[in-house]
Length: 211
Image (cartoon, rainbow, N blue to C red; front, side, top):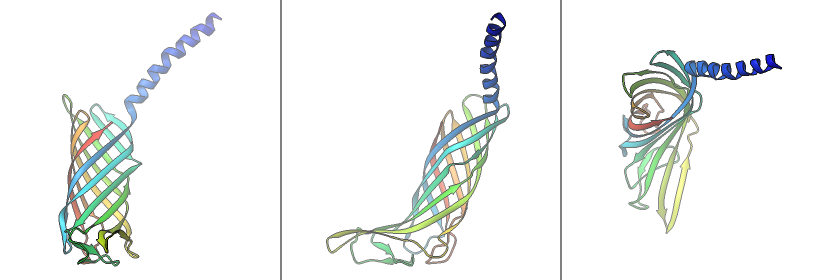
C-alpha cells in the first residue's frame, strides 16, 4: 500500500510538469480581424473601398525558441466585399450596368475563401509582438444585386459558370499589443472580373483580436 501511495503521488506531481512542458512547445490559438479594403484595378462603376472579414479559428502553434512562435492555420475563413456605385447593378454575366430601377439600388461582389496561413510571430520586450503570414487557399465569388422594382424589393445573386472557384493567396502582417493588433493584408491573387478580365487585387487595413 505504501508503494502504491508513493506511486500515485509521483504520478500526480509528474503529470502537471509533463503538461506544462508540452504547453511550452505546442499550443492552439485563434484570431479575428475586421478590415477596410481598397481594391484595384477597378472595373467600371465599382468603388475603391470595401470591407473584409478574417476568421482564423484553429492555429496550431509551435514555440520554436524563446519569443518565437511558428504557426499553421487549419480553419481560416475570409470574406471580402467589393461594391458598385449606388444606382448600378450587375447583369447575370457579371458585367456592371447602370440601372433605372431605383437610384438606391445596391450591388456588390462577395469573395469567400478558405486558406491555410503559415506564419511566424516574434515577441518583444513588454507586451509587443509582430506576426507575418502567407496564406494560400481556395475561394469562390458571386455577384449580388439589391433593388426595388414595381414596389417590390428584389435580392438577386448570380454565380459565374466559369472561373468562379480558384486559387487565392494572402500575405498578412500584424503588430500586437497584448491580444489587440493592427493587421495589413495584401491579396495579389484573387479573381478576374467579367467586365474587364483583369485580376482584382486587394489591400486591407484592420483591427484584430487574438485569443
